[in-house]
Image 1 (cartoon, protein in one colour):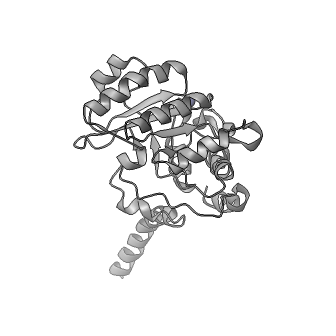
Image 2 (cartoon, helix red, strand yellow; image 1 turned 90 degrees about the horizontal axis):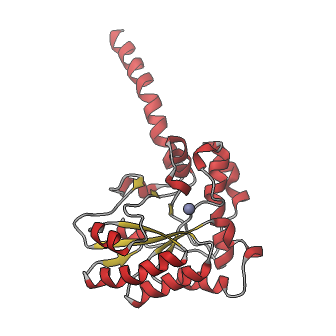
Image 3 (cartoon, rainbow, N blue to C red; image 1 turned 180 degrees about the vertical axis):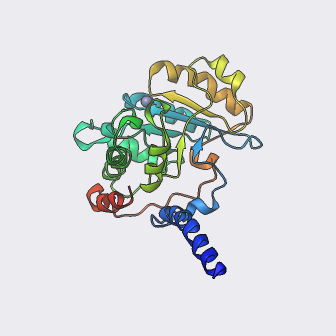
Length: 256
Ligand SMILES: [Zn+2]
């Protein structure tokens, strides 16, 4: 009898843990099992001379293009975190689509800075899901194919447990913070080290800083890589069928 009670008790105790562990699997996130990194990232491997240059917001596409070309000149790659709303069909100017398509086709990478530049931690779970995942639809429509957005940089670097839970449910691999946020080349170069993630914005003063920083990093034998490369994520698996929020909304709502 004692043994039966003990067994029942053990099952009761183990059940919530088993359920909690099962939830992520239901979203097909097998990648998590082999991922040695924490969900929230501030830097990469300290023993590998790789640096990830990142550019947020992207309100002015001219500086996106200039930075991308500059990094390319030094054989490097970088990661852009545009606000999703800026990539919507009706906001595009002639040449914008071609620019983003060229970036997606290059060794550089596109992530997301969410759909609007809102403090995500203040939103409901549903809106956290909507504003973090809707950029996937916009990006796919921009590029004309499914280009998985795997990393997200939350506006103002603001995240909490609720947001991290939602981001896992909608399929993000990592929340990306940064290690160095400065437009002073001397400051950047004095702080940079293996695995550093550098934060810039698509503005003239940031580009001017990059004009000094990029050649100096290349000269110092740092490899300029995307955030995905820095974290050793598997290659992007692009597909023809684009992501539509409405087709996935019910599935996310069920898990929220
Ligand atoms: Zn921002």
